[in-house]
Image 1 (tube, rainbow, N blue to C red):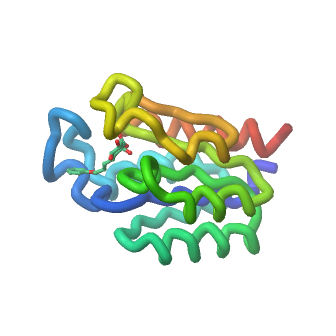
Image 2 (tube, rainbow, N blue to C red; image 1 turned 90 degrees about the horizontal axis):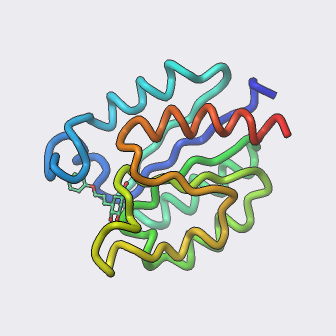
Length: 144
Ligand code: CA2
């Protein structure tokens, strides 16, 4: 099963990683994170970032065709997007929701993800390292 596709999907403003607010999100860029994921990937890895909700929904639908698993950092949509939650619920494989920061230790606006009820697992607070950890965890989920 290690040849299954892992889809790593990143939501709005994550293209600014490493550039703005390093005290919260660190100095690692999204390109660095993609390289960290590819380092531990043993099969096909799709890596995307979008600032557009409809594009994210299309990426989730496209993943339905390819199969495998989804790792998603929904960023600001975590707290509002029932449309993305619905798309994730329509995906048959495992879904890992990932946050760089520990959202549970943040202010009320960043604490409650509406996404979590529709996912297999949540990783939060490991910084950029959470991404390769999630890819490795995904292979285990896909093998079970
Ligand atoms: O910790 C995470 O990964 C978040 O999903 C990031 C979201 C935030 O709304 C969530 O509470 C937690 C924000 C992503 C914005 O990314 C930026 C990166 C650099 C500078 C500004 C924003």
